Image 1 (spheres, rainbow, N blue to C red):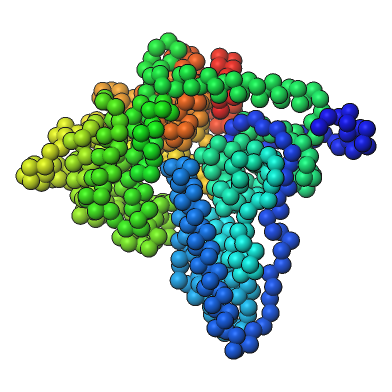
Image 2: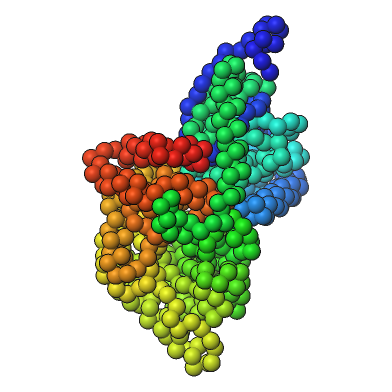
Length: 601
């Protein structure tokens, strides 16, 4: 497409530049594909005769069963492509779909109100969505979107429309939509989708999380883009800076092509440094570790540049089986991780972190609470259920005889919790010794600093463990009273907020005073800007999703520790500056020193 050809045809279209939220890095150019997601579909509503009730209920049950199969298939496909928190997004869908009251309410609408199945599903789904949307708990409010996603699938299956979210595209394109659900995002044909741009959304929405995990360049929050374009319009999408240009001119295309070329060249150069030990330009060691779970291909970690496992999420063993795994099953999983690592590399196993945004679908020993993020979760749950805790501790200890294994306690808020956890560990050690089962008697114990209270008593905690790991996801969330997946307040989720940075400073200072090393294992470690700032603040190790290691390792390798430290010192003096301006300042300073940062972030 070029301007001269368009002019000859009399079809010149106005160039527009829009700015939204950059949620997944990358530069792509291609034709727009306008996706309407069934916004014009009408749900049929009519009366059924009493004699037709059984037939209508049968249609309903078949549609539920097909929907369940489709969602499970999507979940399996997602887990083949990514691991970690994003891989369990569809667990919420299945939890709702498996809720007996959901299907039961639909059946009741059919039988008592003599309504057809489509109308019953629509009415019940609207009711559920309204209830979830009105809840105080942000995690539960998110379920409103899940209900809507499920309802669309059920309705399509009732009408015989097949997969509700299959896009019929025939050439590489950039998908433009009002908003994309998780089902729609994972259903995008990966060989034909260059990127996506949406009117709504946030950096922490499910679609954005999936875009980053799947490596799809994306910009969200563009306002009314879907109303301003037509399918076939040429788009330039900059997922690094959050910009979209519609029907660009020659100069804009030429400039964008240079950026795309630079990005591709840089991508190729990343392979040259990914297997090198992590270090700054002036030689300071900064090991890069991987965040994993039992579904992660452990043998692939070295190839992506991982120098160990900084966070092994054990809760997915519970979530995937919807039950407590046996001691033998846990031992097998942890041992596999320990054996997969080269000599000298460690695996840090975090004990069960259920609760909050992670719940067993059938309930089990974890009961639903009004506010699960502030409830009986993580170490609190384990100390209240010592038999479950001991089975896991024994499994971790048994695995420690096969490699360099460390154990980490989540959500510690008080010294007595750490004492109690260590007492359970020592009891398990005594049991195994009496049974003649080998284990590492000097296994290192660590504390996750993810609650402000833990950071404030970090000096006391450091005397009772061997390392700290800062979980920035929860630390930011609890410090700023903001839910990172709630689009309404997502802008307040700010890692450069002075209060958050002061808590990290306190933790690092206390750890180093007692000879402990500190890692950061939250999502912010995967942001090159934050990674360099953390290094300057004295953080010793960075742990992140495996697919992001090479990007951040390259950025850190281009900076000297002296420059990173100078940046951190400057930021410490910016306590009166808004957090977003602090971040922008950091980014601009780093771009001067590391121009590649524009393409790495």
